[in-house]
Length: 625
Image (tube, rainbow, N blue to C red; front, top):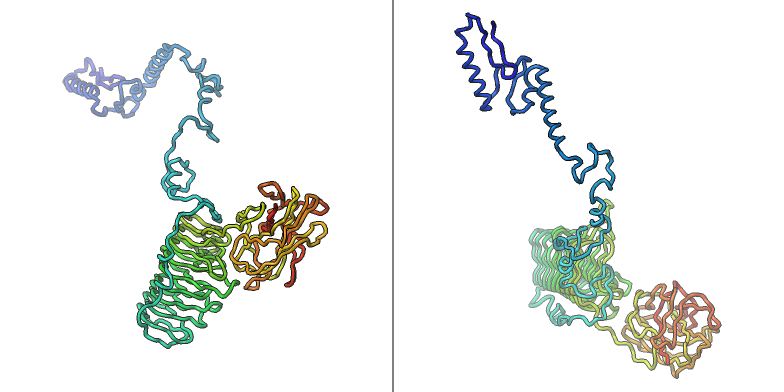
């Protein structure tokens, strides 16, 4: 008979009774043994194809091997055997398994009650929205300066607050802090006329008008320009102006270096003309140091530099063309990313600020304002702010500009009229610390009786200026019968008129009950003018106390005003003897309540004030007993 094959391993079964194949039995058996040995060792592929022509690769000794080989009947038989074995195993499991659904497969969806302890376990977890912590929870501490939404741990806050004094925590205007400030450095250690400007013998240079550089690296040294006016136009890089005296005369600047880089200006007397020159120095990048700078509306104006400027050890004073001038000691409207340093200068200014950073032309970034002495103008008083950071501006093309990465620290001197440091607009990364701005104000005058404001500085509002003379006043209502001894008012500026009058009126009739004149008033703060004799008043009437503000030395009237001060509530003295009621329009004691009051007057006399504006407070007070 012919040879046959086994169904799984395809082993040869030599035919029996076939004389032609008998001599091949040994070879066939040997080949079968080799296959069996190879298959048992897992060393390869059975090269002979099964009956369905599919190559056979040994995978494992499971029923899946049988499915890849042999007849369909053999496949079905092997699969049934495997499934039967699996069913036997599953049937041996005790059902239901504890903690699982009672049926298998479970019915979907599974109810919360069908899962053991699900509801009670979830109740122990904090909600994702607005979780309430208990115990002592901890969190990672962000890196210093982090400005993200990460949790601020106590360690992060302590790191951020290190060295920050009380009074510097206002993000806008930094109000005067009545706490006694640290002792400021000695003014003698700061730049002045004695330690800045030229020295030694200078060579007379009679050239006048505009002198323009001709080459990079050009040097002007030891020169005294004696003409009617000189302006150095520096139009080349790396130029030096050293130990020179330069009067601007009718020119716009002493030095115009707006288009040059790395300019060095040192030990010079730079004398601009108030009311004529725009700035003493206009520069793009470089250093200006140990110079005596005076005149013009602005001391130093720098802009446009990507390299930055250094302004240090200069004496900037005598600025401006009068009280209407826009005056800044140092100003920029575009600088960075190169660092700019304003350090250890003496700056005397009025009107706007000692240092004015604004981004009206482009971004301003990487500026340090450190260790400067900031003084008020001896004639016109302090500027609006010591440092004004105004982030309202646009870049070329119209996008909003920004002011970033500014440090203002260790500056001291006289406080600005509206505050010491103001930050507004599109700003970020503004660090303000360790400044001592706002020297001890004049003490309030002594009084015979009680006052309503107690000699405290205004709690809000701002300095106001007017071209007209007028009378300001306030309605008072005695709570006990008593005497008006004097009238007080807050003199907001040293420029305010030194002469005038005070008076007391009947609020219902406008009749003048008493008056007193004053002359030679000086300084700023609360001022007291006594009546010639105490005026007796009663609880049956209301009264108006008034101050006539005459024009000051610059032909303007100055006063302090706080909008809506009396819109909803009045102010009563600490002893409860006299009150300044709200401007609420009710009729009390025979007249309509209005506060505070004003009226425009001529140049000759005081008048009964009967007008109101925004329920403003003008800080007029009474000495009452």
